[in-house]
Image (cartoon, rainbow, N blue to C red; front, side):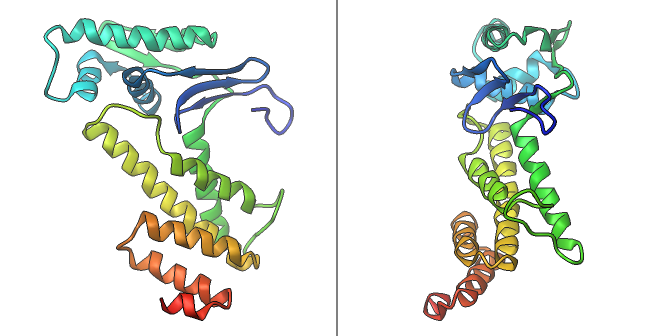
Length: 231
């Protein structure tokens, strides 16, 4: 993705599938499930080193293979090969205890970009007067709808377990915040069809949430569909 001023950028994607996208260099995808899990772990925890034992716990929980240390090295080797294919092998630093992923300046993570967009929309909602725009303003409704769509895909397919499930739940919570922000922004911008769709998606995401039900009723009423609001 190219920055606003034409600066070359590289994006690490963890939503949908793990991939690296660089200006002028195409898209490199990591296809193996266990390797995707480890790559996501290294990206999320890149503020510190990740130990071999932590990688093993995320991959296998309490059901460790007999030679788990070697198995961990094999999975990490697949992650390194993926990075090498994207000319990014130097990002992964090996230490005596484990590995540390260091992203250079100008490299962004798609999940973090999504979170920043949601936070910006929430801050704009709290401002007076509210800032709304179809394109290029403080908050871009179309861009925020796209963020919700990307978050709806979830993290790249990974192994089952507490860590992975917890990360997926975090993404789901962020998507809920995004859908609520889309509803507010679309309602204020008289994009009532978008507001209804966002509220409907929120109810599907949070079927037992009073907030989701209330926003859907508000959206139907504003759209003139009182029969749907009463359903």
